Length: 529
Image: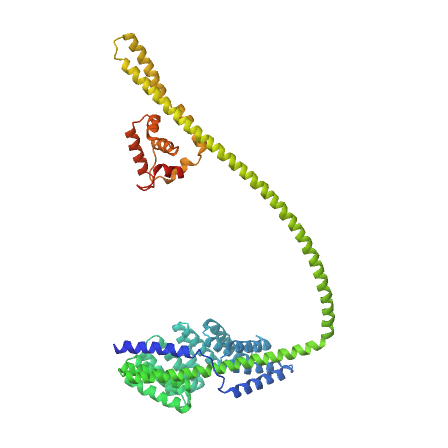
């Protein structure tokens, strides 16, 4: 429970510190020294540019690039280093070129551009081999191993770090060995092999020659961190407290903040949450101040670079301006004349274009009016034609109904006459009834009716079939047509030769197959199609 609360506290304070660090920065830290250093370096570069010695100019660019790198103006640092390399040329195999490519690799490492860093460190490795410079070769291998570590390519990282140790050992460079041992310890720490990491950090401490510098404090912090991760919190506490003491003596704020952060985690591991919170607050305070100072220095450096470049640009502009003043006046006069000519031509063109556009618009309006009149006439003719055909359909339906009724009545009368005993009469009447029934069964009149309906309502059949929930039978389709024409159930019964009850059943079945509610009128729905 306490651990969860502490982790929540950590999260809140870390985010708070990050937000605070983004506030406006006051440039009050080492303001004068940054100004003076940059001005001195820039003046040195300008004086060297007057010479023809590429190496001295490249060295000036290197110094200015280092200044930008230290103040975290990385883009300008890369620019200065690349300018120096271009001056030297890629085929110039000397120590200055080697230092420049290593610097570029370190800058990209700081920017977390690990592939770019690897590229420059490989160039440094090849250059060190060509120059047979074992110190620089060991340095390049160590840097290359670090770039692999950042890319989580741990096997390659360990390979190059161990090769670097062999070279430093042969050179009897204790500090180089110490640095590489610390790098190897960092790899094993990433791999969570804490015992191995502990061993290498201890070796790094053993080979480190000074006990009062920032690296010594950093190694102690690493040892304390590994002990804590190994759950040996008390042992780790001793190293971290020692690191804090040294960083305070040195006034090294970054290591001091790191020590407070590690102490907070150590005390949290030991269950002493009060001290953990105390050190966490101290870490946040120092880290906030570090970021303020860092942002101040970076901002000041950027401002100085910008101001210097702006002043140089203004000077160049003034010098150039004095040489071309008369030419500019002449160009200005020509430009004024050309401008007025252009205005005149433009006015003439616009006026002609406007007149032409007005004529075209008027003509188009006339054409549109004629087209609209034509459309209105066509629409009126179509409406009259539909009205005439609807009337014809109604008359035709009534005619079929009356004809069918007459024939049905006639057939009924004849059937009743069959009850008489006259044999010859019966024979003739049977033939006549057969002929009447045959005429009643003919589909010719219905076919003519359907042709007329399709001409009047060409899309009706496709629309009702697409809306129907089930496939309509031919009889149901005919019923829907007669209902759409507004015929009564009695008239429909006569046309389809059905009883009124059968018509009601058919209407019900048709309704079930259509997407309408019980309250919706069937005839109105069919007319909407």
